[in-house]
Length: 454
Image (tube, rainbow, N blue to C red; front, side, top):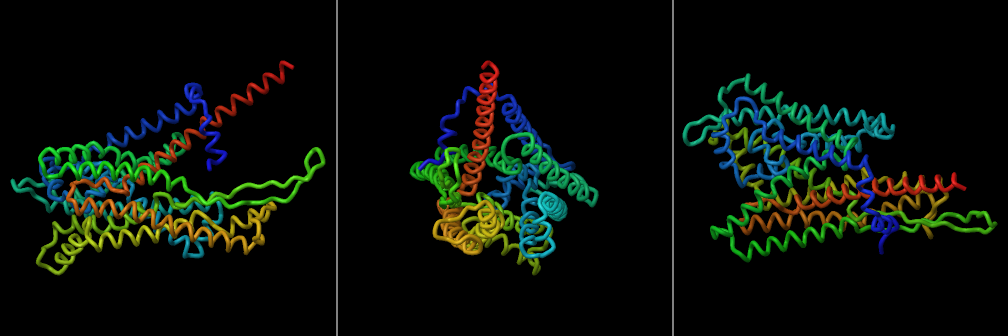
């Protein structure tokens, strides 16, 4: 059953798009910001040898870093200024949000409203700078120790000068991306950080498609596998679109109120609870937590003797946590399940919702206001979150397992499609909201003009 908002959105007049000047400016600003992001992905770190870097990209192909490279739009394999992308910020936000849920002082900051959220965002940025510095240092150290078969060094002049310069450049690149994402959110359309991640994934689509058909041409990938992969992508897109719009609508009843004619009328509405309240956050969080230690270990492994104890541990870590390996799949699935419940608890507070309903005189039929309503909301939300967590796990894990088993040299899995579909739907929803507001504004102006003519 279509909601009232869906019915209104379906009746929007797209001819008003040409008249919505502010919306056009926001869209052009968003496109321009994403173009800047793509240009930055081709600006290399100072002191990098591109020939040796290409050999390094071929050597690490097929590993866990391919997924990191996908999220950064190919910036990692080119060792650009934004090679780390926004992943350090996402990892820092995980730590801060978990700390806010466990630590009383941070929990009190979270309840202070805008001021508290700004303070938590400041802590998140400090954490992102710290993680960027650590990852950048190990990344620079790993590049210094790499040389290709021809003896070309990946770094022209190794040393502490290069390491410090690389760390400063990487931290500056990530901080600029965060600033760019904030500008998109405030002056453009959609969530800035999510759009940057989606732009990086979409930028890799031509490479994925060319690798797929090149494998079919050379015979390394069978025609049946190619057809099956395309069908899987289409089915996944349709399934994700359906599940992301699924919701449980709870009936909210309000007491009878006197109308102008003296009649008593009871109002009712619905409280929509999305099946996937957490959105794309669980797979992104789970991926970033897995990528953080593996990025450090894979680059640090080049500068550590493999025969030593630390070298053997790093080699085992990189070996068992590759795509398609049971340990990686198990940790990834558990991470998605955990963050699905955790982030749902962060974004939806049953007690606060129950208090708001009680203040406005609303109640769920058959449920007493107050604590009973909060318990009922928590019960319903837990049940639908179980289904949502299973849905996220299946969408993200099964395609990657199939890709690993079939040997397709691609990382266009369920996680990528989930992010692209979700961000696209959210952005289109915001565009519809701006068009709807513009359409209502025109109606109000026409009504005022008619009133003056009378």
